[in-house]
Image (tube, rainbow, N blue to C red; front, top):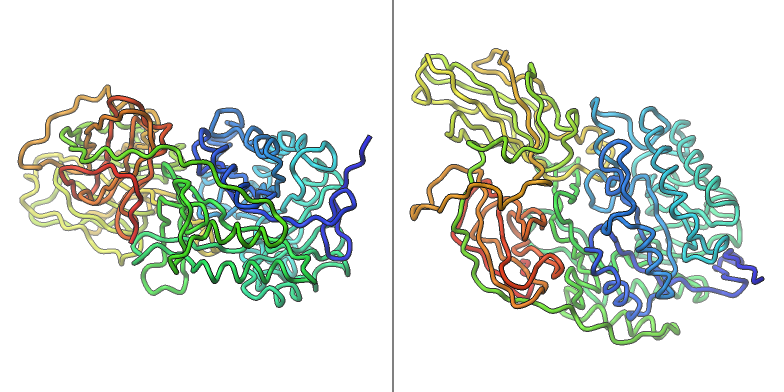
Length: 620
């Protein structure tokens, strides 16, 4: 029987005793439709990679407390890893529990906020019990795929994720105990022979690692590879400090409202990658973050928090996670900011280090179905219950969404009020993330969490003082913060400050809270109206149209005539559309069909007449 091993000798990875250079790329199964997993993995392999690096998104698999899904097609983690193994790709597994990744709440499940904000990512209850329960489900699923023990694809497993940017395992006893506890859980399932590691940027190494034998300390970023290696070596025993830049950035993330899609010049990323491979006498290893980014479908995009910004502290991420990676969002070959092909440049680089490269598969078919007129409308306000997934009645005041198991989409609060004579003012002190207020069907405007709070003015003419009138607070969830300790302190969604104030006094009323996540809405069952020629009508509203396809095909929906909302094709949630720099939403071919395809936009701010299907993405 062959004996397998994966070890470190002389600062070099050894597989079965032989030197092994890891050429890896990050790919996120949760950002790719499962029908395209193989296609994207083929492209990575054709680029010259021998390994993939994979985050596990906890909230993708535990959708509500104790409701685990590792079986359905999009969530079949084991199937994805086995597919990689079938293609002779090894795996670096990053099981979290926290992953950052520009993903909602950094992968943490929002149900943990049911009773309010809790201490995260440390040895505190209830957080640590939730983690333990999740790992007890996850680890037995991936354990059979370990390389040394079973001949599976998994070579290395990461403990936590860039912990030094959040906690302090050097000086804080709870934080240190937390990393040690996670290490123990990993060891119990994966044995002493599996290589475990922490990773941090150079500044986070000191606070994010547990120096010593049991855990490799690795580094990411690595703009100056030699310097990164020197810093990393301080935390590993002599000869046990292999250099693999765990996140070598091929591009960068982009927030809504930024002037252009972020990215990097091909020449620059190739130069940095080459320096990394040449470190340590040419024994360097690399992981490209990202090799293929994919898409934040649905409501899965996260947000950043810039504590130094004067006003725009909250920074929601785009729906596209293209990342300016060598493999673009739709599988195309990426182009760097210098106009050079990033994919073929990486092929050339990896070939020069002995990797095998070949032509990637042909792209899945692309469809260009032209203009799509959205000629039907279904308004939200008169139809709240038809678009509700879960609701709670008889509340004394608005409550945060997670408290009634509302984890994504939108949350609304309704009550009836009697307005005094004359003008009135309504104050809502604290909410996440964007608040629209209506009295009856009249909009009083909106406020965004980044703006200074102001009163919503209710003119005297809105209702006669004898009439009870409906007050609606409608709140958009735009992505829970996934990075920064201050930003992650309270990532709840909805109205967070209790009762709004009407003319200075707390509004003592009975409220109904509703969740609108669109997960189970049957759009065909709604009673649609034809849009008037005037394009009048109260927003928010659903707008519907259709396109005819000759066969299933990838396409991109150009949504610019509409202002802000969410788009659906044949009931599949494509994600949010809004402002610059993203003007198109990626539609994977498996979500389309031959014949009639239905398109629905849930529009919040300003509805145009039509959108367009085209073959290429459009970013600023």
